[in-house]
Structure formats: C-alpha cells, structure tokens
Image (cartoon, rainbow, N blue to C red):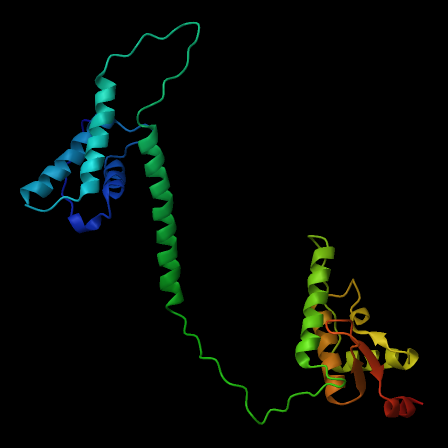
Length: 252
C-alpha cells in the first residue's frame, strides 16, 4: 500500500503477534480476507526493528510470526506452475491459515470485550449477603412422616413432567385465584372425594404457572392448619391428601 503510516505503538498495548497484526490491518484499512502480504510483512518487521532499536526483548512468538509472514511472502515470489486446462483447480492461498488464525483470534477478542462490558455493569450492583432463617419461625409439621422437602420434590417432578408435555408456545392468561380461594376449592374436592385425592391431580394440564404455585401454597397452608392429612405409602411414591375426620364432620 502507498499510504503506509509510520508505526508509533506502545509495546504494552499488544498481547501477542496476532493482536499486533489485527492492529496493523485496522490501521491501514486492509481487508482481512485479502491481506496485502508484502505491506503487512514490512510493517510487522518495522515494528520488530523498532523494538530492537529500543533494546527491548522480543518474545519468541513474535519472531515465529515474522518467519511465517516471510514464508508466505516468499511463496508469492516463486513462479507459478501453468494450470492444466483439463484439471483446473484453484491453488490453496498461502494466506488461508493466517487468515483463519486472525479470524478466530478476532472472535475471542470481541467476546472478551463483551465480557469486560458486562463485568463493569455487574460492578454497579451489590448483592446482599444471605440471611439465616429466624429460629423462632415455625416450620410446618406434616403428617405421616412427610416433610416439606417431600412435597417440594413431588412438585418439582410434576412441573418437569408438564414442561416436557407442553408445546413450545402457549397463550398465557392470568388466573385471578388467591391462595385462600384455592384452599376452599381443594377442601371442597376432598369433601366430595373422602377416599382421598392424589396430590398430582390437583394440578390440571391447562393451569398456568401462577396457578401451579397457588395450588402448591394452598396445600402447604391447609397442612399447616391441620385441615388435611398427607399419606405416602412408599418412598418417592405418590402423595395422597385426605380431609381430617373432624373437618369432615364440620363440613356436614
């Protein structure tokens, strides 16, 4: 190129030979897919010479890249063999491997830049340290040896099963049902089904995520208030709900 500019670069600005090459390509507005190898080699060697003039050590990878550039340049100076008309194949461009390395390095460099931006943004947020649960907070005691963790495990399995069965798109509608309303609905079903209700059947396939959570919280609250009895006959088996006998009498 005729508009080559003298190199005035701080050595600390570069992390390696590929970083330097990318800088030279951008500075001279070169096409990374069609690098003028003679011009880029001259500027690269001028940079190394400037380092030597300053009596600075040159890392080995810079010298390896210099040798690579000169090898590619020498291949362009060799006479080209005449192409065979019967079997014309485009010769491999000696710059291809260098271009591939530069493109890969450019991708990582841009990704690193995006991560630095996100890191700066994250520094503007402060996370509150985790707080211990107050010792005086009562823990709901479930019947028949069932714990809150058992109910949570059953709920997670139910949600995971629904996620696999549901289509990729769906229409989201609001469920204006409070926990208190859902508690009444669950109680009414238990009254009509005194033989017990499977925990999973409380969650209809068409229910929204909000309705799932509301139903789960309603079951927890009914259990905490000792209005229902929970029974699990086998470890990790289905959980059944029953209305307590005294509650059944109260309904009648």
